[in-house]
Length: 65
Image 1 (tube, rainbow, N blue to C red):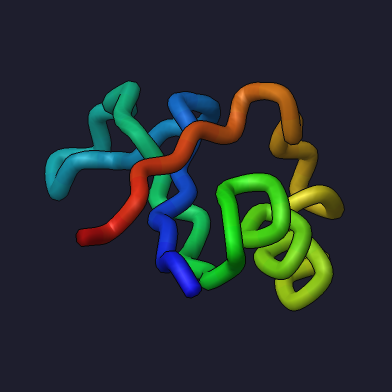
Image 2: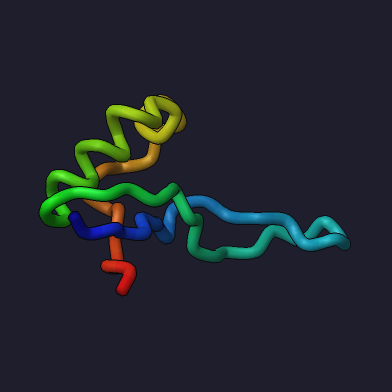
């Protein structure tokens, strides 16, 4: 079983001074035989990702070694 970190460039964060900053958002971590099955697990366990408007096609991942 492989573990993946899923993230997206959609969204932003605010600095302590209130300035909006573009950055990557970590959406979560999930395990699976491959990236596709891990993403499926992530989405089924975290309905807020799609409900919040994140585009599935924009989600990136990296395998955690």
